[in-house]
Length: 188
Image 1 (cartoon, one colour):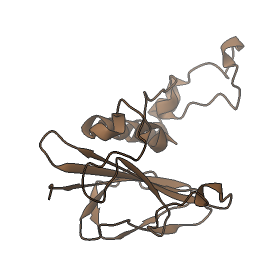
Image 2 (image 1 turned 180 degrees about the horizontal axis):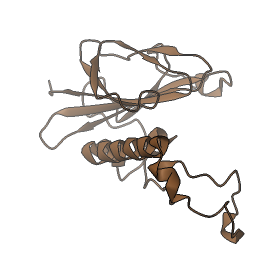
Image 3 (image 1 turned 90 degrees about the vertical axis):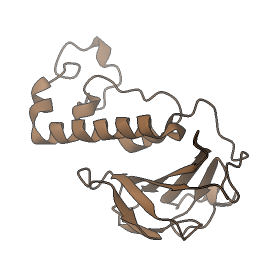
Image 4 (image 1 turned 90 degrees about the horizontal axis):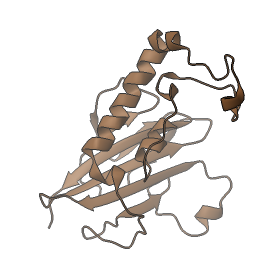
């Protein structure tokens, strides 16, 4: 969920302790609790799991800072075209097929690719894709066109310590996983 939060428009809102796995046990009114439900357990931040989640959150924050389209200041409609064949936002399925209006009503759909593209100050086109697998099994995502570009997996929620790595035209995503990919192209 942190990956989707940091890839969303608007300001990412973390509550104290979210970065190391704090929970209120499902209580959304913890402000009136003066017990373990509302207290911060700072020892949790020092556990291997807590430290790993802090590192993962820091990587996501750095990606948001490094990729301007992850912090766009306006709503995207899929109408702006930073380059031929690329819109500012597009939606695809795991097969690399652009979603139709009917696909949005498919209650059985469990995979989604959001692709955002922007023109950078240096004139290059920067593209970031968010892959989401909400299914109970791993899925192979086929990348939408163009197929001749080298993409980089920036971060994968199922492999939080994996450094950025290049991929070809497909990527295997773990169940309940999310990954951010990027590529750059020079204008034609």
